[in-house]
Image 1 (cartoon, rainbow, N blue to C red):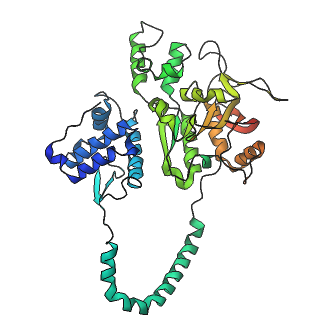
Image 2 (image 1 turned 90 degrees about the vertical axis):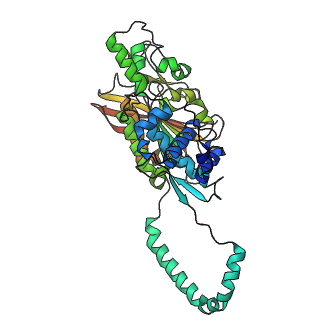
Length: 426
């Protein structure tokens, strides 16, 4: 981790003193990378070295990226800057509401903008200044109030059709009144490809180990030059699937006026401490997004696959079949083929109870894509609520899981229907 050393001139700058207060606040205590990122960007800005604030330079200086890393393939800097913007908004809306300077990161730039905040005149001074004008205001006050009422009424009437609607259920469970960000964690394609190379199941603990992510903890001790080059690429790149992009786009559309609160993250960037609180959407099954396995024990429909990873069709195991239900729901043999595929949609609380999780997982990419498209359709959401017995008067949140089936044609999902549902009582 980079250590920031400041000289006496920087330390006495009130803007730098503000940065130090910000990184010491409660909003930044659990975000060491975001703290370091803010310090680096602020230091370069205050020293007039904004030409050094490029995405590639920040990746190398703050996150230890190699000289030849690609900002096209690795979006971690952009993700962290988006998180920093949200953290700054949270600080100035809470601990820093009395600050005289405002810290902003303009869109399209990595340079910090310091803006002086104009404070209102103290009440005592305002009262003494207003006294000579009191008689004048008493004469014009009735007419002023009448005009103000008329203007307010006209503006309210004009804006009424443009009022932003809140996100629909079940996303409404995630967008709380506190306006906290909702983190969409997409699948790690690198992980799926490494599992195919390794031909071994991988636990979440092993996935999080540096040796596995670097490709060192792989069964083949003597890879060819080509295999070694591929493993190095997989260990550094952040890749996801087309299905996850479709789901993310559906979530953005459904979020409506709250879409600015959505943060897209790779499963590779997440850490266990991140799940202590907050609201999340996990996209993909345990074989592509290992974080879903963290919640697998709470679900009735659980993903299973062949004895050798990557061989044989995957299926959902129905742990407690109800009358008329199957014990297994087998999907496509591989992504891109045609036939029936399955997916589940589940809403669960975080283990500590300080947030909620929406999980969209398909046996293949077609299933995951179908789950996102299913929720984006208002009629499908209404059918799901009816199947679960949820009405407009039902207090939220309601925790559930639903098994859906779709017909895939050459990799494209269609004709989605609900097969089974369960209410979850945490």
